[in-house]
Every structure is written in C-alpha cells, then in structure tokens.
Length: 166
Image (cartoon, rainbow, N blue to C red):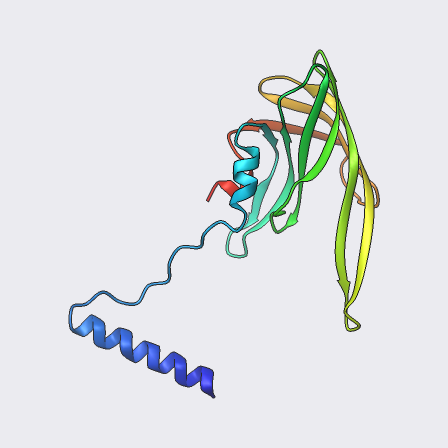
C-alpha cells in the first residue's frame, strides 16, 4: 500500500510540475557499473563476437578477449564470457604469443550463493585459449571447464568491451 501511495504522489507531483511549465521528474541515465573495467581495457586489443539477443532485457551472449601489451612473448589477457548478462569482471589469463599463434590459460573462480541456505560456494574452472591472432581477427578455440560451448570461435577486433559501449 505504501508503494502505491508513493507512486501516486510522484505522479501527481510530475503532473503538477508539467502544468506549471516546470521540467518533469526524470531518472538520470545509469552510470556504467564498472568503469574500472573500461579503464583497465582501454589500452588493450579487444576481440569480440558478443551480440545482443534480447534488447529489452539487455541479454548478451558471446566472448570478448582483451589482450594486453606483450612483454617479449608473454601476454596477459582478460576473457569476458557472456551468458545473458554482461560479465562485470574479466577472467584473468596469461600465456604466450609466437608470431601470430596465441596460447593462453588460467583459472576462472566463480563465487555462488546456494539458496535457501545462503551457503557460499566457490567453483574453479580451467580456461584454455589457443588460436591465430592478427590485427582484425582472432580465430581459434576457447575452452572453459564444465561449460558446453562451441570449440571454434572467430572474434572480430572492436574498440571496447561490451560494458563500455553504453
């Protein structure tokens, strides 16, 4: 009942303000939740096949691979794995690049809450990425332990990760 009263009060206020020629109440645009990911990946090469599958819900599926500057043949990268909602944090992985051949690996640590007990669960999945990299594409395979996914991927070079496009 309180919520209904509050909504009616806000609607009456907005109607009264509009009748007086004053600006109506507006909700500010959402601020990206994880600006740090945008800053973190700003200087990285981003490869993506992420697509928006449901505009109203904002559902995104696919992968994004952010590759940092190489130190000799060693590289550090972040993998973003999207299963409806954009991940707010990349999976840190590292490996080697030799010519155009890229090989990366690491562990994805997932923190879950089991309901109704509210028991904390920690799962660890190994991540392996192998493929060919050039200035426009990454072609290869992404394997995440315990996930069913296509083994072959083709990621196109993009300017920024999905979270930073809004």
